[in-house]
Image 1 (cartoon, rainbow, N blue to C red):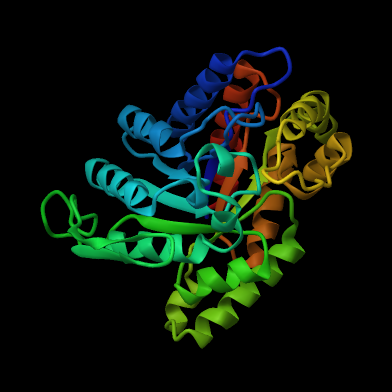
Image 2 (image 1 turned 180 degrees about the vertical axis):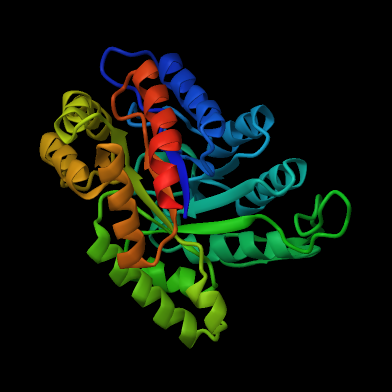
Length: 344
């Protein structure tokens, strides 16, 4: 089992954006010190829900500051990025970090980002498969041409080639993971043999159903049975460790609802469509109930149970739910010292 952190660089009420980013960087540094496997970085634009607008840029900083930690994006939003530009950045990070970079990609939402970056609503609603396939061809090829409706260009060489290590011997490029929130996105990932990143808003039962669907679709696509069973899916969640369950839950219930309301309310749709918003307090209570929140033993038991029910062995856990730097650092250290040893 591999446990990492999920970092949003969340801006809590009363905090500055620099404070949120500093906490994000420190939590990643402490994650390596604590022996965690990875840090996964979220990407958001124009909202305090997350103050990191470029997950690959922050990944580059953290790869330079760490030596063993895997750093991934969760996710880089494809509709507002050019797949070739993102592929070049991923190749650069993969090669210069010794293979410690994972590229998580997703469709994002119908936000005003699409207007600001000139992508348009169609890029969100219909363009994701074309963008993903162009990205994969770039990461796996030596020369690539754009042959789609949105991206059309003459053949150009791939420089640097990601499927080549610094010593010229490694045939593998960077890992690509797809954020999946619907059956359609599960089928899309499975058809390409790509592992899924499953969100923290769903519990074990729904995640197990998505893994089962992925496996059926992967079999239909001809993926070997051993690769299907070993697919390294990632489960996102929340982790808060306390000396008792009430203490851990109270830490999150005091801070997270204010952040969720401020952050989620700031999202603006590109076309004025109505958004159904979760109740921040009820959502926090839900997260406390389905994720590793409680004593070290409770947290270890919940991670083990999720792994057993879903078959997922990689976790990306939000550790900054307190909104406080010192509390976040302590949370990460306890995760490494008191929870990981129980997972084997």
